[in-house]
Image 1 (tube, rainbow, N blue to C red):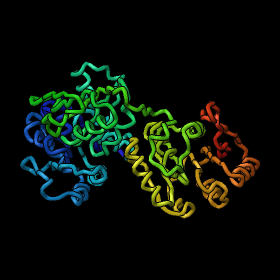
Image 2 (cartoon, rainbow, N blue to C red):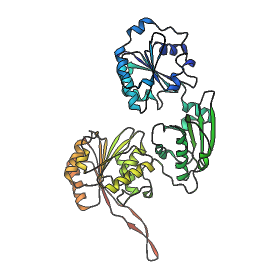
Image 3 (spheres, rainbow, N blue to C red):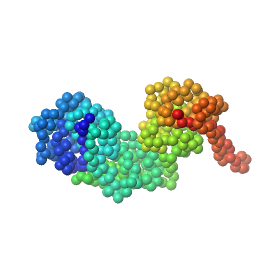
Image 4 (cartoon, one colour):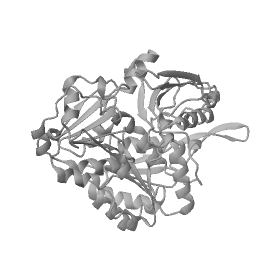
Length: 439
């Protein structure tokens, strides 16, 4: 399909500040999408650009009609005397925006967005839905770039993330001593909630800065320490900067696998720290990969998998109701609120889920039907890891190792303890681990 969509980044000045070539794209589009505050700048933005009648006649009225099915009347504005252009305010959540835009395929369309559309923007979302030849991206300095310039922060050393329309708990993996974070926000409450998280994590002296309306006449910068930041009155349109400062008592929770056991709420059904780190090393998290954590217990393996790699996904399968609650609580507290949790008996609950790149079998290791269902679902080239501490579990892993190959390892760990007045190294239960890659 030929080019029909232009996604144009703009600044606080709106469409009127765009160069003539980009304003011409806006003028020649039959449909323009964007937030209301940017659409308000469209009408008077192109007085020097001619809207060609032949282009108006060639536009697909049917495509626009399909798009309007997803829009309320109050979200539509017609501009130009010949009604040649339709302005539509896009509607959250993101799936609604997609449903508004895709029916317009083939009709000249423009999306105007703040800053760089490819940096947590609509362009990044549509890039996975459209062919490259269908759309063009026209960038503008992003809010991250403007904020880094105001703060004199080298952007290559800064974490950038979006908390706009996303759970604020996603910030947890990035809270580390000396880390600097720039975050897009939903509204004024985002800063208050981040400040609470920092204070509760032992980072109350971290400096928060709200950079409002960057690049516009109303630009404003407000700073304060996290533990008292709620006293600052800020608006709803800002970038939040966090300069992390740890108290002496703050617990370090880095993204490297092997978090302290105490970081998880559990009933004891927990893959312990050292074994967990070894297990994650075998599972090999990587960007965008999906893990099945089968018999998830308190969710530690799936949570650490997601923390270890960008956009990594995990599904935690667990049947125990109390442990399901532990998984949800741990996912929020450790910064993986998007962990998918599936309740029910494992073989049945696996059905219909996306094929995984890796599987950890943490419960029911000796169950042959469960193993066969997992093995069948695993992608070719995927990694399978299972840990056993019982004799029947070990026997099952030995049979599978004989049949499928891979590595069979015994993990023996001892930790210091006291006997009488002396210190000894007390062994823990040994763990037999089978790790294999599916052909």
